[in-house]
Amino acid sequence: MTPMRGNYFYNNEILADFQARSKATLKGKEFVAADLPKQIGMPTIKPKSNTGKYFVEFASSSTLHGLNHLVTPNRHPLEILLALLFIIGALVCLILLSFIFWDRYQNNATVIVVDNNQEQFKISKPALFICPLPNVEYKKFPYVFKKYNIEHTPEAEKFFTFLSSATYENMTETPLFDKVPADKWLEILYDLRQHVPNNILKENDPYEGWITTERGICFSTRSVVAVYATLDYWRSNNWTTIPVPDELPYYNVDGVQENFGINCSALIGVCDPSELIVYDTPMKLAKSRTMQQGIISISEIKTTPNVEELRIQQRKCKFLHDGGLETWPIYTRNMCITECRMKVIQNHCNCRPHFARPIDGINTCNVTQLRCIGRITNLLFLYEYPPPVCNCVPKCNVVTYQVGITENAEFYDTPVNLSVMNLIVEFPQVIYYRTMLYGFTDFLTSVGGAAGLFLGASVLSFVEIFYYCSLHVCFYIKRNKQKQKQKQKQKTNVTIN
Image (cartoon, rainbow, N blue to C red):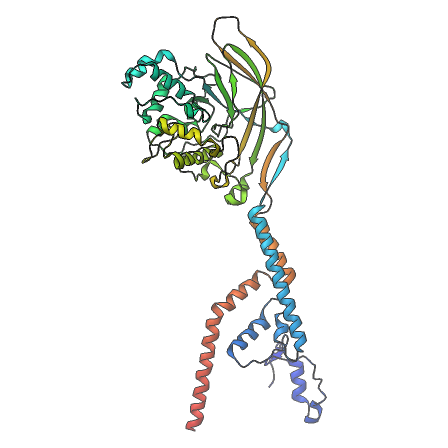
């Protein structure tokens, strides 16, 4: 047969060798070298079973390096064994490295870096919390008791005065008083609270208000999440989320001062404006008729936007919108701690205290149950990290404020009952950033590099494996059935002839 011009192969045989064989005489054919290439690629064995033929077809055509050596004829068994061992060893190494890369992606995907460019710092102003001691105005007792139909007795005054500044440590000393239902205590305390002037920081803060905390009813300002702890929010059974502004008020110069005055003794605390205080939040006592000076030390951790695409278990922190709490519509670490602490109280004393958000079907703690809370303080992790069962991970963006009160305190000689606090703000030297270290693309790159190193594989190789294990099997079975039908027809025709 005369091949067409430009055709270099005939019947899977190299054309030059085919022509030489065709022209050679019977005597000359035996001089054709036996090792001359006669086909494309390496020769393959010819198994008898369909499964073996299918594997030979895959191994001989796959882009995975080394598989073709398993189906090459005239191999010594030792050679086949060595090839198989090397392929298995390479596959094991790839799997082990892939597990290491996956663990790095799951557990070490982020890193903390340091920024010391102080000129570019924007430090958020802290939220201020003022918890008067005691938080009752005695002149309000007659009006409030009349409003709630409470008999005005010394025992009633003593009980609500104690209740306004009750702590976990002194709840075992709660006076016995059963004249008022426990679910009314919080409303009464709100009506009895001390007066704190509005706009106390002279900033026209829209977030000012009274909130319920583990320290009692406190006045808050600059806290964008304080609304979730207000009596009105709880009473209306509100679960809506209040939008947080893109940019909070911040300091742009170092050494600024915060000044405010109140007409009573109080516990003063500062914290992240996107956070609430809890029982172990450091609080400073502002004494009556005293001017005190303190220094606010600040540290901050920010999170870059690319970290948000990671799962919570990978970044090991939460944003406000991550949620996950049962009694709060957003997530903060202190909200999580408070919720977990209330669950412990609920499990041991069968109630929720009056300063916790009420839940349908669960009673508010009465006097006896308050004393129960005082007896289980060792279970409430008051001054230690919450147990792992609480799952209270840190916030992704958090500012920590520490207030140190100086020793010098000046007492007024005037009869005005006023507590003045002067706080000097010191800027941090560095800010920490949580940023992406090992993302999903890094994981793919690492696994792909290891697959190329050990198996010479690429994306196409894995596509081939999937194709040969799924779709191509159907085509192969269909092709074998057609061949069997043709053979049966040929046999039938031969028998008839």
